[in-house]
Image 1 (cartoon, rainbow, N blue to C red):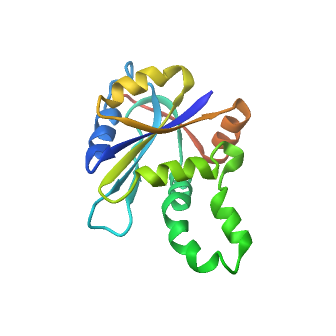
Image 2: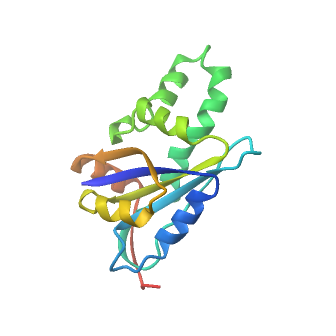
Image 3: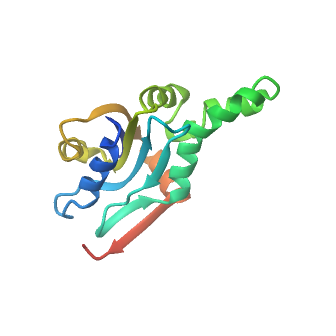
Length: 171
């Protein structure tokens, strides 16, 4: 099975964790893909980017997936206030995005509650049998926010729609 685990950090910590993770030697890396959100105290919205690990054979997701996920997490709530009263279909879509892939409104709320100004998060895509390696590699200062376990059919849907298989040479 595929998992996405989200770890929260104080400001600057997510970027440093992702940098460490993206340069792990392939033999030690249990990570297929990762993305980072950093929200500085003085900004109105977070910055987000994909930080796919270097080298080796791996499955990763396109930037479109991460953009869609981060849009639902951080951008739709900003615009929802003005449209939600008049457009219940829009509100419903914002509350249950990607639910068929295992991400319901409760999980989105847990992430939104932890990723606030002055914090950040690392979103790690990995196989379920690699969860302990991921937790060890991410470091001691991690705070797990959410772990999403995808069923085999959900994983297939995710990779069919957003997957990329990389055979880049180890760096």
